[in-house]
Length: 190
Image (cartoon, rainbow, N blue to C red):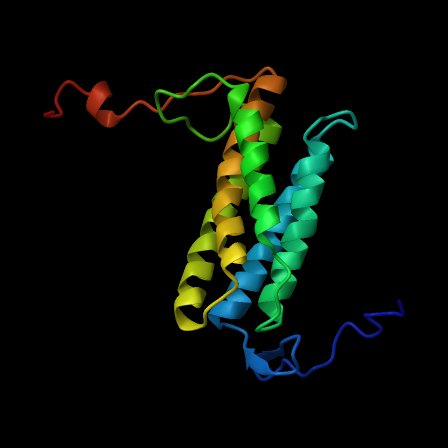
């Protein structure tokens, strides 16, 4: 493969538009570009999370796989009509979620994000994945997208939640259960 980026600035975006992979142009504030940018942000959080983990961490391989799929997902969004995300990738996320969750105690309360540094970073990635999903849902209403892409981003926040719980335990952290203001204040009517 030859050099893909030989010049980093082109000045073609100075008018507030950007090029898509199919050669068309769109505004930099379009839902499609917002989705691409949010997936890039999510992938950056994933990179930070991976950099915090020890070399022997069992989650490194699935996290790295997710990073590759996020790059595919962003590429698919950048080329209207192109499809890279397949239903098998969604099934793989579901299997990872089920396997990790089976090793955790059941939750009876909501938990606050955190527990350890790596778990906190994983929760940040989860929150960004939820934002990406909201943008993708809005884009899908405007322009129908590949259904596995929509399913993948939906499942990803679940996997990241379970991974955060797993990392919190691995790091010796604790899960902090949410205490509703209703249960804390005797002055609040039930």
